[in-house]
Length: 82
Image 1 (cartoon, helix red, strand yellow):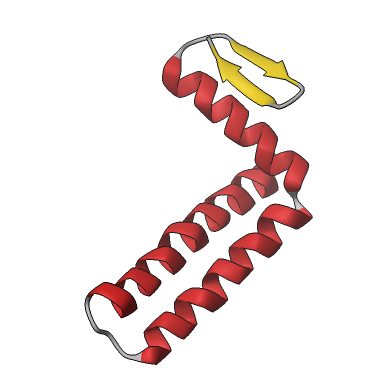
Image 2: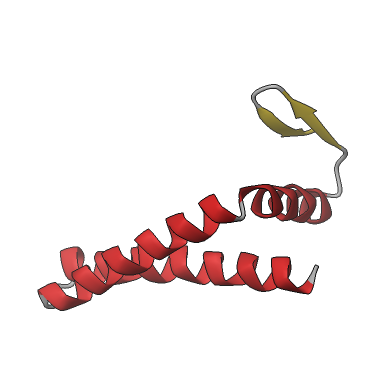
């Protein structure tokens, strides 16, 4: 479970950090290497989420249930917090 938690945190940091770097490049006029680094980090996020998909989804579902304190219902299309 520790490995899954670390991967989940790394994926979250990669997703937010990569997106932020691209935002800095596009909106704040930072250099191209900032945007390129953001793209690489977002690609890393995609790899992490793909390789550990089941764990990533499970932790996401549990996290949502803990935050909302609502029962979680899994459907064929995803999850619902009801």
